[in-house]
Image (cartoon, rainbow, N blue to C red):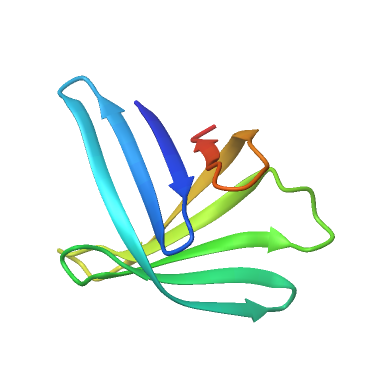
Length: 100
């Protein structure tokens, strides 16, 4: 299974490649926060479920992001760490992330 994330000004798109094809989740960024030197994106998916993306502290290397959500069946908080594979810089270019 391969997972990629693309960051745009108002949205985050997560594409998961499985044996059955691609699963695409588009998250609308509702709010941004800085907490303990970490950038936090509070997002909402198309089903209006809350998703949170947390970047590393400012002084840490940018090698991963953490993705949080609540399980729809148990309401347990789930964390997924997405490891950075490639970062593109420049106007309008996405940041590409893959699960490590």
